[in-house]
Image (cartoon, rainbow, N blue to C red; front, side, top):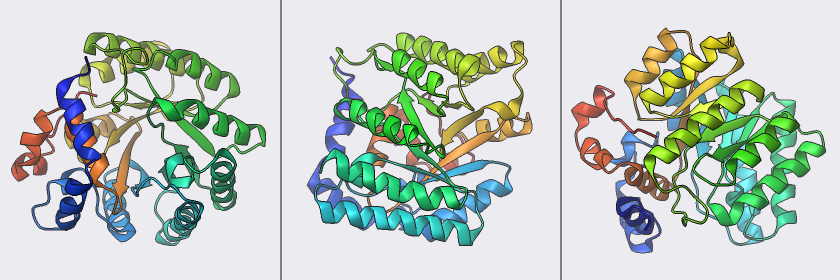
Length: 317
C-alpha cells in the first residue's frame, strides 16, 4: 500500500478546485505557505532569490513551474518561454543553469514535438553557456524521457543532463547506462506516487538504494549531483568521497529552495558545492503539494514563519 500522506497530497495536487483556490494565495501573497518552498510566480522573483543565494556561496538552478501541456500550441508557447528565460537569465548575470520537465515541452503531444522543442532550447543554451537539466517525472514518462535524452546526446548535445529517482527498481541500470555515456546525473529519491512493482516501499530500502547509487556516481559518474536533505546520507556520501580522495569540485550536493538552509550553509562552509533548486511560476501548486507529501511534518513547519526564518524546515529526502 502506498504511504497514505504522500498519496493524499498527490491526489490533492491534481484537484482543479484546490488549484483554483490556491491561485489566489500564491507565493507572492502575504503569509503564503507556498512561499516557503517556491521563490515566486515571476522570473524576477526567482532572479532576486538566486542573487541572494549566490551571495551566500550557493549555486542555483531555476525551474519554471507551469502546467503540463497537451496541445501543440501550448508546447510551442512553453518552449518560447524557456528560450526567453535563457535571455532573461543571461542579462541578469546569474548562474546559467535551468531545470525543466519534458511534459512542459509536449511529451503528451508526441515524441517528435517534444524532441524538437528541447532541441530548440538546447541550441541557444549551448551558445550562451547554459546547462539544462531534464527533471524526471513519474514512471509512464521515464523510458520516453531517457530515450529523448539519449537521442539528443547522440546528436552531440553535451549541455544537458538528466535526473534519476533512486527509489525505482530500474534506476541502478539507468544510472550505469548514463555513466557509460558520460552524462551528468542528478540523483534524487523520488516524490511521485508509484506502484510497488515500480518502486521500493520502505524508507530503509530507499535510503540504502540512494547511498549505493550515490557511490556508483562518485566512482564512475561525470560531475554527479547528489540531491538529498538527509544529514545521515550526506555524511555517508562525504565519508565515501573523502576516502577516495575525490576533489570537492568534481561533484556537488543539491537541495530544494526553502529546505534545510542550515545544512546548506554548513556544507558551503566546509568547502562543498551546494546547488539550490529554485522553482517559480504560476504552476506552483502541484510542486508545493509534493513537498508537503514528502514529509507531513512540513505542513506544521510551513505554518511557523519563525521556523522558516531560522532555516529549520527539515525534509529527510
